[in-house]
Image 1: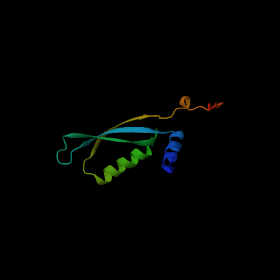
Image 2 (image 1 turned 45 degrees about the vertical axis):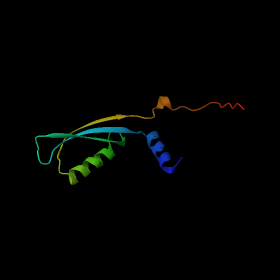
Image 3 (image 1 turned 135 degrees about the horizontal axis):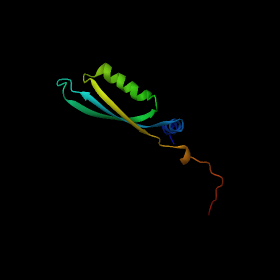
Image 4 (image 1 turned 60 degrees about the vertical axis):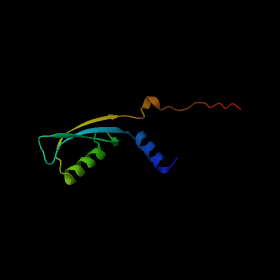
Length: 92
């Protein structure tokens, strides 16, 4: 396992989950037309710091003003899926 993989696993164990955001924004030259952009990354619900960082970047650097953002997230690793192993058997 690489260091990046371990870091991703650690994040998931700390509550980070796959987050998808559907971003509706207005076209820069035709403000009455809405366009869709889909953003997806691991983020920490319910504050979503990565998504907020991306939306702040959007507002500072892109011409298409935001109309709305719809967010969905799903935990990859849940407590019921993670359990300890009591025994191990090896067959030769």
